[in-house]
Length: 324
Image (cartoon, rainbow, N blue to C red; front, side, top):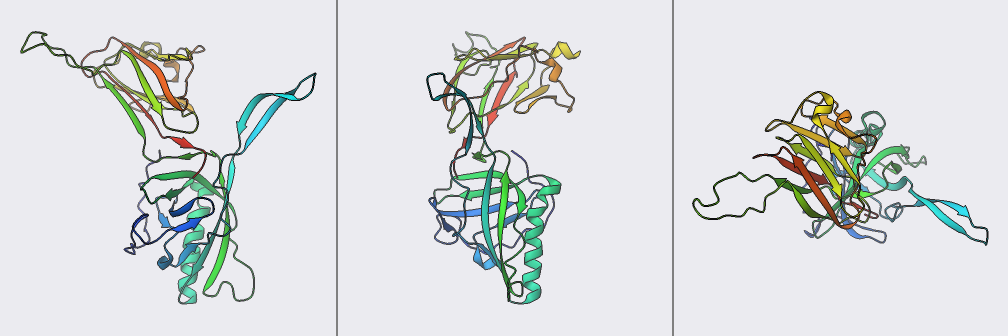
């Protein structure tokens, strides 16, 4: 999940309570009451449902928040009908109307320009995030790019102290994510005498099987962080048999020493050593299968050869959902 860290000026705090606090929020079509925030790629935070800031979302006209659209590849059957060969999720477009006002013309223009820049800069600086928070505190967000719509109504009287833009936001990845990641940590226990001071058993382990639960609607593609010592690392999804192996020696490094780390991303495939160097050659290509986690329980196995005290594996992913 991207970290928002750029030094920017953030709109002032109005003191309105968050979702569930009795103030703020709008009722979205088919989704109920929610508080909506836009995070631009430079780190600006733009509440979209706080009327006192001088802009607000017009709930009538909001669309594109429902289930993902899919495209089917089919084979015609000789006896009629068709067989589905492949299903591909399609990018979505969110329509978002915003009403901008000001007590004077110059105040309106300043707000109009600032908001317009916050959205259009996604075309230069990368996607922003549209986040919807529920009264129970849960949040879902989606990556967005400005497509069109910041033109105003174009009619008499508009653009003096008020105007309305109807934004089209393109979502390359059509799924909503929970901004709070799920983290699974396994670490090698520190060895000690079995008899002093008394027999002990530790549940902390690197080697062995475990079950990882994916609360998503769809498959997620996790990121793995391996901490040495380790000489060979294998990750297997037991139910499918898919597996990949990381061999540090294959890139000329030798065994991972205590505290050294390698990060493996499964989508898009990427392997980085702690100094940022490319270690994609450390995987067992062409047999490596950088598998994802299906919705529900997934039986997986971590195996670290040459492990010792401090050896660890961290699996991280953000749950993904069909709707907001």
